[in-house]
Amino acid sequence: MLALIARDIALARSQGGGLGAALGFILSVLVLVPLALGPDQALLQRLAPGIMWLSLLLSVLLTADRMFQQDYEDGSLDVMMMGHLPFEVVTLTKALAHWLTVSLPLAVIAPPLGLMLNLDIRQLPLLGLSMIAGSLALTMVASIGGAVTAGLRRGGLLSSLLILPLYVPVLIFGVAVTTSGTGADHSIPALTVLLAIAVISVVIAPWASAAALKAYLR
Amino acid sequence: MVDNTWFNRMANSTRLIAENLACERGGRVVFSNCSFELHAGEMMEVRGRNGAGKSSLLRLLAGLNTPAEGRIELENGKVNTSLAEQSHYIGHAEANKPALTVAQNLKFWAAFLEGTLTDVAFETFNLSKLKNDQALLLSAGQKRRLALARLIIAERLVWLLDEPTTGLDATSLVALQTVINRHLHAGGMVIAATHGDIGILAARHLQLGGVS
Image 1 (cartoon, one colour):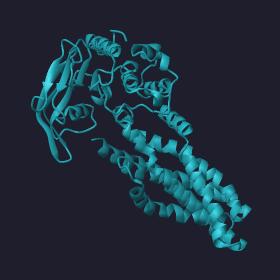
Image 2: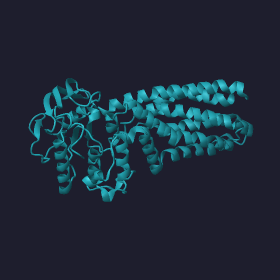
Image 3: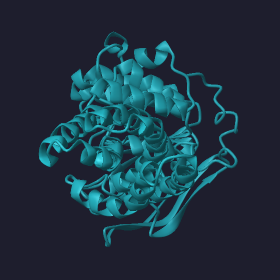
Image 4: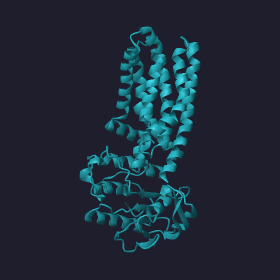
């Protein structure tokens, strides 16, 4: 399992792509939004957490179809399915590697970038915390979409349609952490729900993606 | 590889039995009524025209697909271990990562398949000089050799080889024959889908579909 994580991280490093493209997406949103909405600082400040969440969510979605596709096409998944590890552990491991190489770095880098949208600096720690928790859920849900479309050449559209409805709860509670008012009383419930969603997705997603991939390998 | 492998110690009582296998893909019956029995130390060449189901049979045996009918059983294999876990499968897709070097590829599979990576694995298929080259730069035959090196790094009872000689030059073909003979001698089993002759004299034949 560790070998698989190490391999996927090495692959992500040597191929680049995933994180770079996603980060580029977030940056372009951040640069364009103030131009589109005009220089109203108060408005931007109010919208900042929501826009940050949207761009994080969409950028993770952007990388979803890459998660299993290469391993499916080059036959690695065949060999992995035959190994002693349960296939669900393989999909979980690959999703975790995706989280470590794409979603987590994005969740860490994105909140400071939010200052470009005049984000209230006091909200920064909370936004960061909620994004780290949320990014795990985003990756896990994305892994289901990635698995379902692993064998399709242009699976991006289909996986977006499949994943987006499942992203709604993450988005609602993620944004709620920073917008439901200031102070611990208001944000802790939302943060707890967000963590719960993340934990549930870690449990369910590996099974769903393993089942989808097994159907492809026949 | 040494002769004293675990499957050699099982006193050659291992048998792989396939009974009335039928394979269905996409609602179409690829083959049916396929039966064979393979004993320890035996090799079987699966032949048949394109589309006769050679690869499908290997994938059934590898546990990647489930038979529509019939059963596959390994008698006196390792206990509590599925046939797939005791098998090597080298398919057309070679499971090499182009962005990694030859050594990194093998190191990963050695860890994943719980084997050991020694210099022997590189030497057998003459990969020592290519160790630090990216798999991306390899020729078709070299990629095949890299995939075949998986046979060396982890010990498995059954080898499922899908046209293993594709792209191999004469030297590598001899290397493959040597490795297969050693495996058979140690009590292993080999099932290979092929059109040509792999060059193992004692190999049995299984014809799928009509004669090609």
